[in-house]
Amino acid sequence: MNYTDVITGKNINKKFGKFELDVPEIHIPEGFSTALVGENGAGKTTLLNILSGLRRDNKGEVSYFGEKKIDDEGVMERIGFTGTKNYFLPHWNGNQIRELSETLFDNFDRDKFDAICKSLNIDSSVFGSNAKSVSKLSDGNLMKLMLATVFARKTDLLILDEPASPLDPLMRDLLGDILRTYIAEGNGKRSILFSTHNISDMEDVTDYIIVMDDGKILEQGFVTDIKEKYVIVKGDGEVTEELKKNMISVTPGKYGFEGMALAENTERFTGMNISFETPDLFKICVALLKQNSKLSMPVL
Amino acid sequence: MFKTIRQYNSFTSKKVMAAAYILFPTAVFILLVTVSFFNRNSDSQTFRTLLTTFSVMVSVWACVVVCLSDRFNFGALLSDKSRISEMTKTSPKGVRMIKNIAVWDIFSRLLLIFLGTVGIVVAGYIGHPDKGLKFSMMCILFVISCHSTTSLLVWICRLIENSTISTLIYSFGILYFFPVAILYILPEEIFHPLLYVGAITVELTADVIINVIGMCLLNRFIKKEWYKDKALKG
Image (tube, rainbow over all chains, first blue to last red; front, side, top):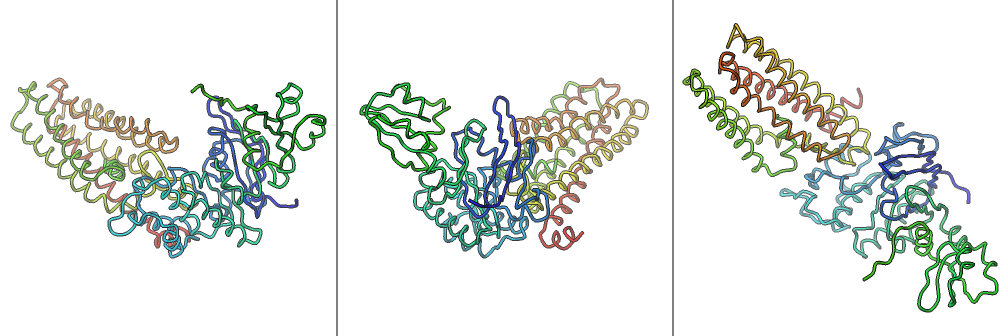
């Protein structure tokens, strides 16, 4: 597929004690929605912070919208970022957030912000004359408020750190609609990069996927290509060494096994009593992450 | 100190802070009276009068500052004691504002140290002409070590975003008042109440004046219209 990069990263490296984020190359396609998936502690937030310009103490180079750097004129204004709890300071209230957003960003639209807050049904106690601080908000409302400040700006790139995690199913569904509309109305010039643990919920919004594990990128590509690249392998026999050798991951069960293999290797299973299925994103991510995961079933 | 209140005020109840800033000078006052009890040979009348004046002055000052701090909430929007919000950091204007605040903060502290130093030296010579220099030098060391180190380290804390270290440093900032206690334990021959009160008055006054001017300028600077008209065009 032909596309240009909205973000290109090269040789990105950042060390925290024993953890090392090491990304030799990363491409975020312009005009698409990219999901960043990985285990807790895989380095997703660190990578997003680097790509959004929040963190500058890393090695490597990142360019935006072609060859521009983060400090070039107008680049940061074109990027909308929502982070974790440090996005707002806890003592701020909604009025102050509106005022500060207007001060900090030329492309912030106050009326649009108010309308979005109303549409998203954000807890109104943080606005008005006796406005409460955002520290009193639930995680879901806090995330909705963060999203409202970003959606109220004219941007060409959204970088969202786990936007769906604290949201209820209804709001998650609405977020999917909003993100799809954002991309559709951009005529190929608007892009989204978001991290998520809820890849099943966000699959409809995902065009391109990056799977990370322990600071490294395991897989990246367009969802259609990735789905063609892997197959689910199901069988009712024993999990033999021969089988394991040809699969990315395999989980034995009471009545057989299920695992993931490269589609190009399907002929290696000829003669075995197995079936193939097209995987969804969730299964692909789980299979890829299982390869090096330290997780195991606890004794209950 | 003014800045400290403003920052604490930004994430703690105003009432709690008002109480703390009234109770703290009171505690210092009690400490001074207790220590002075063991220095009964001092000029007790002058001593007590000046201590009372000092205590009242600091208490009133604390109340006024806490009330005024609302005016500077816009400044407090940008940062609290250990963090700068991600929203601010992702805005080019926000980054510029933070840099300007940092520059002003450090500049104001350096100016304060200069004025405080001059004040202490002058007060030292007035209070105790023959031994004033030695005493003044000691005061200067206290002021510089407590005041400037706290201010500079707080900015380092904001950069590294470590709230634990920041809290420790703010606790260290309370050492600002420790010279009060330590000076009273000094040998009697180099002690004179006027020397101390003169020094602390000059320092507190300079602190308040500088911070009020600074915060007013900062507040004006941050205001959107002014910022757009002047700062961006400039």
